[in-house]
Image (tube, rainbow, N blue to C red; front, side, top):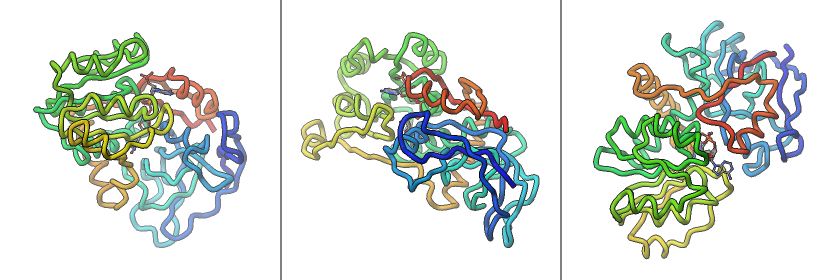
Length: 327
Ligand SMILES: NC(=O)c1ccc[n+]([C@@H]2O[C@H](COP(=O)([O-])OP(=O)(O)OC[C@H]3O[C@@H](n4cnc5c(N)ncnc54)[C@H](OP(=O)(O)O)[C@@H]3O)[C@@H](O)[C@H]2O)c1
C-alpha cells in the first residue's frame, strides 16, 4: 500500500516538511496498520521538525493520531481490523494517511469518544493527568500559575485544575485569549505581554505566591516563574514554546524558599503500558463526566500542515488543533 507521509530531511522551518508517497509494508509481528481519520497537532511536533529535539533523519513526524485498524500483523492480539484507536506517544509519524505502529502504543476508543475528539485530547489530556495528579497532586487548598492558559494543554489543564478546586491564575498572549481563558474557568488572567506576571501573581495571592507553576513556555518565563512561588512550591517546566529554559542553579532554589524544580515528560510518566492505559482511561472518564471538553480551537486539512505549523509558532492558535486526513 502507498501512503502520503510527511518527511523531514533537513530540520528547519515549516516548509521543510515535504509530502512523499511511501510504501507501507504488511505489518510485522506485534504491529498493525492504521488509517488516520484525524491527527492531533502538538507543540512537540515543531521541536521534532526544527531539530530542537533531534530525530534520526530522514524523519517522519507527528505523535498523535486517531483512526481505524486496517491490517493486523502476525501474533497481534490486542486489536482486530475495524477497531477504532488513538495513540499519543508516537513513534513519530502521524502526519500521514496510513502507517504501521506497534500495537502496544494504541488505545482502543470507547463508544462515547469519536476519532476527532480523541485526536484533540489524548496527548494533551494525558499530559494534564500526570501533571496535576502525579507530578504535583492538586487539591482545593492549592493556588496555581498556568502559562499559555488558552492553548491546547492550557485549556484542558484549567478545566482539570478547577475540578479539583484549585485557584487558577492563567497567562495569555492576546486580549482575545484573555476572554477565552476566563470563560474556560481561570480565576484570574494575566496578559503577560503587557503586565509583569510576577507582580500580578503576588497581587492576586496577597503576596503569598502560588504553590505550583505549570510552565510550558520555558525560556521567556521560567526564571520569573520561580519568583511567583510560595516557600516549598514547585516549578514544573514541561515545555519550551519560547525556547529551552535557562539552566537553574540549585542554590537559587534554596534562596527563593526551598523550592522544587522538575522537567517532566509524558514519555517517562506513561512509559509503562499499564500507566499509559490508566492515564487514557482517566482522560476518557473526565470526558464522559463532562469535567473536561476537547476544546477544539480549529480543524484543518492534514495537507495544510505547513501553514498550521506557522500558525502555532506565531501564537495564532487557541485550544486543541485537529487535522482531518484528506488523503
Ligand atoms: N512535557 C510534556 O510531557 C509535554 C506534553 C505535552 C505538551 N507539552 C508542552 O506544553 C506546551 C503547550 O503545548 P500545546 O501543544 O498545548 O501548545 P499551545 O499551548 O497550544 O501553543 C503554545 C503556546 O505557547 C505560548 N507562547 C508563549 N511564548 C511563545 C513563543 N515565543 N512562541 C510560541 N508560543 C509561545 C502561546 O500562547 P500565548 O499566546 O497565550 O502566550 C502559544 O499559543 C508546549 O511547550 C509543549 O511542548 C509538554
